[in-house]
Each structure stands twice: as structure tokens, then as C-alpha cells.
Amino acid sequence: MKTLIKLFAVVTLAFTVQLSMGQISGTKHDFSTKGWNPSGEICIVCHTPHNAITGAEPLWNHELSTATYTVYSSSTMDATPGQPNGNSKLCLSCHDGTVAIDNFGGATGGSQFIGGNKNLGTDLSNDHPISFTYDAALAGTDGGLFDPTTTNSGLGGTITADMLFANEMQCASCHDVHDDTNGDFLVMSNAASALCLTCHNK
Image (cartoon, rainbow, N blue to C red):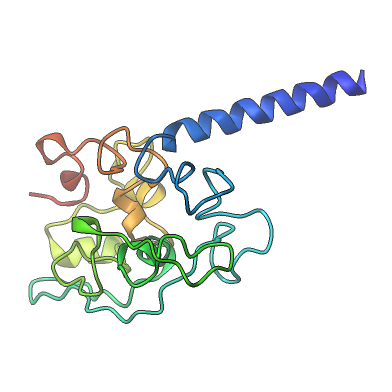
């Protein structure tokens, strides 16, 4: 009986892993077939179950960028974005173009750098602001934002619950790196600006 239970657990785990891999498999974040990833593992470029980078999560395996960024600034913005933090730093470990994609698992001498318009560089002043607190106080002061604590995100809960990280707007507020169903790894379709209008009261 114990053998049967163990077998069931293994099959269930394999099925669960396959389902989660099915979302990233075949997308631009699937590096399993790249020559510089001899393991052929789909998750290893970003994640590892052992010896993860201290202070980065979840189980982060990719070299982090040490760049200083020019952040978004506007006289009409009531929040003040700081240097990217949280999960935005993880995204920028490839997307700022300063760290090679193949710098993972302790390797630092990679040669595969992100290119084209996916390379945001270190000047983020023309990109949507990130790493700032988006709360009811900001919405009240701004007047052009919905209150994230009470506004439905369209993803099952409020904006705060589904799209913010420690009450901060981050890259992952709009992008799900593991699921490209909506294109551009968006958390929902932006048809008719639906994603933008989740937060912006226009």
C-alpha cells in the first residue's frame, strides 16, 4: 500500500510539473533547447532547488544586475519610483542587458545577451514606473488611479491582492514570466487597454 501511495504521489507531482511547464514551454523564456544550457532543464536558468542566490527569491539561480538605473520621473506623478527592487530586479537581471542570459548556476562569463526591444537598458525613464508604493493614499492624491484595496483586478481579487507586491507596482504586476497566453507575458489581455484601465481611471 505504501508503494502505491508513493507511486501516486510521484505521478501527481510529475503531472503538476508538466502542467506548470506547459505554460512556459515553447515561449521566449524557454531556454531548455539552447546550446548554452546543456542540462536541458526548463527552470534552471532562473531557479534552482539548491544553493540559490541569498536574498533573491524564489530559489533564484541567475546572476543579478548591479546596475544603477535612471528611473521614471514626471512632474504630474504623485509617487516617487526608487531604484528597482523586489521581483523587478529579477526581471532586469536579463532585461537591462548588463548581465548575460547564460550567467546562471554560479557562471559569470556568459556571452548570450538579450537584444532588440526586449533589452530595456539601464535608462528606465521612458518605461512604466516600477518599485513605488501604490495604495489608497496614492489613489486619493492622484485622482487618476483606482483604489487598489477595493478595485477588482479582473484576476479574481483586488488590485492589491493580485497585482501588487508588498503594496508596490513591479514588473510582475503586469507581466507573468511563466505564461504567455495573452502575448508579451501579460497577466491579462490588453485589448481595448483593459490591463491599463485596471489601475488607471481614464
